[in-house]
Image (tube, rainbow, N blue to C red; front, side, top):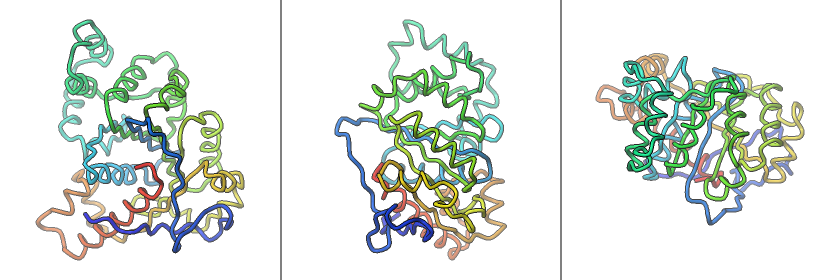
Length: 307
């Protein structure tokens, strides 16, 4: 897909001082750490139904377009839609595997495991789904997650809703200051604009300053309609100040109008965006609409400077 100019329009209710615009587009301001060798992208949010899955699809397709094949971790045990679409073979293995995660981890942590090639180790680590539970004693899953991040150049973590506690347990056990010297850690927070959602994001920013943050206003497929009447500055003025200080990025994923039939097909058949675009029976007008929306979304996300 060809790269287009960013077309992310920040909501007019935001204070003018909270953003920098160029030709109506959000400008990226990033202090690049030249020591950064790897990238960890975490997609999270306070609740379901706000478009986390579709935004994760966008990140995956963007990295594939950039020839940066990502390691994808779908941590949603109940509805692992990302895995069903982009990790079809691995998802089937999860469904049929009788190997407990504890046994798997103990096997690869042995002396022989340390001699394994990184790709082989990754395959073993991913053969059982990693789930961050809210149980503080579940250290094995968190250890497996850490090892995947260490072995991968580009990792995308798709979090389920209401998973803040599990994520915090992992972050609290990690030397983030050290990790951030070689791994760029970005939390994309997909929000419906509710007070609870934005307050959680603000809490993350204060508690974990080593991370980089991006608020995702997802008006695209699979997102909430609450953003239509939402005014960021009125509900949480602190976030405007953070945007002004370049401590927080904000991107808007535009709407794409798809037929109900195509939307249902995407979910029922667990298709990736690439698969639906190349499907022989797809209407070409619909395919073009989806393709141009993806290109706009890619440009918007790339404009954060994190890619």
